[in-house]
Length: 211
Image (cartoon, rainbow, N blue to C red; front, side, top):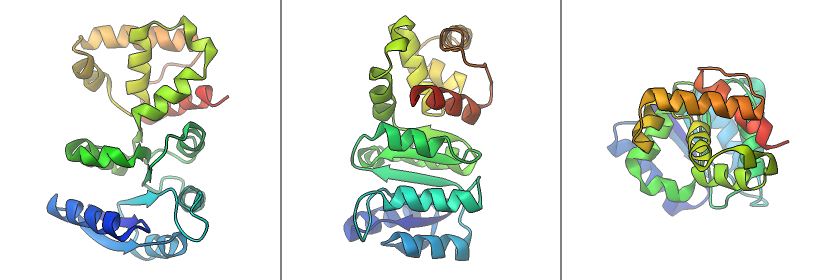
């Protein structure tokens, strides 16, 4: 996989480069600001870009703004945004743009190398991934979710991470049929249209949660 990294902290940037290259990926550019990110993506057309939320000059939301700009030009541009903070609104706004191929993870998640690399594969394939801590923050702010059982909330959180029914079943140690029943009940309670396509399911859930 050909990857662009945009991260202003040199230690993190080079650490990501080393991790990715060890895993067999090619880092075609490693930059430290959003302007260089835009140029690198337009030049190299990577399979995925990894983008820090906060970069120069203001260290606020340059990464989010750059991701939106890239997906305005190409709605399916694959991007993984990394953040040090749990920002449910930023994640929801970002994940409801474009046509899939987008992710929002906390930087701590990189420590789980296998999970991090799996997230990159999902995004490069057009799926969507959202950090479970962000999902749970969104869930806590939705009073209408009181109708969901604790198990249904667990399933919803895993759905919003972009996991398939089989992956959810494995994580919760239940059958695929049980997961399907939970998902049908969730969609019924949230008045959402059931859809077996992962990124559409994530978008529907997040659109509801950010209202």
